[in-house]
Length: 391
Image 1 (cartoon, rainbow, N blue to C red):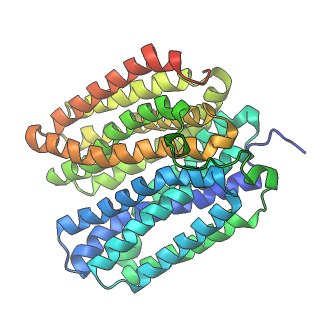
Image 2: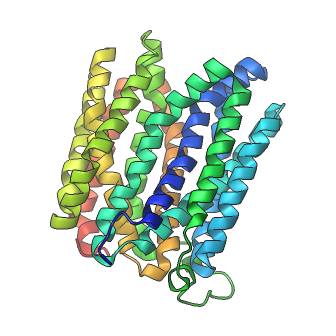
């Protein structure tokens, strides 16, 4: 038996199931605004609120997710979260009002946070010790594929078959995730906590301090990425080239997927700094170019740079956040990093919207490129020298 095997059945099943969870989110991000405005009589504000409720759900649940995962049998948490996720997606089939959508989106965000955290933590647990950094990088491929497929599938299914068929498709997919994530029985020594859960309440039960430097780096890149995620489609639409938005994100995600095997190998063989420096550098260059171009073609040309940069740096920060803590704290360390990303994307979409409205899109991207230059300097002079994990 090869104990150094990366693509074990358990690792693959957790990855596919996690990818399905992410795909439901990307499908609904693309399709729900149309459903809310065209079918339920909602406004553009209502469409934005649907995303806000989801983010609130994830942010509120994420810290508790880590404690639950590390304090209880991970198999039970996985079973409950995947079952609830299936139930929530099934309830979308019965929605008839905006208020129901908002409630379900909040629940969707909370269970999404719990489910994706436990799957990521279990993926870390089943990886061989010598390949954890490479494996965490490869695990991100599944969410990247969801990023490519989700919006396209959501818009096509909605336009071709309607919202009822779309909801039914998502329900079937979450049923598949439920089966795949629970079909392989994990050994007790991997699933059960290695330490007793502390009684009472303390910040260490929800936040892993050794992961905080890397969560801070995730906060920087998540904040600036939110500007790309939210405002590229709006800017292209204002130019009369709204359809190019899907092309931009397809190229963005495709470059991540294509480069992922190489990035993982470089990380495993040479260390994280050989991934982080070029990754953050490319991301800065892409943002800087966005700050000067004013045509759809110019914007589209930045997608490969941004995809390569984000796809290299963000998983590297996640891997370091997890590797900085003992394996029995995998749940809390994973949740700590994801919480930073959730907060960054949520806050970034609001703060950067104010900047875009006041100064315009080009200044927005010039400012975000400067923010990432500051982040890179912080990494070089402080974080990599004083972190809890050797690079």
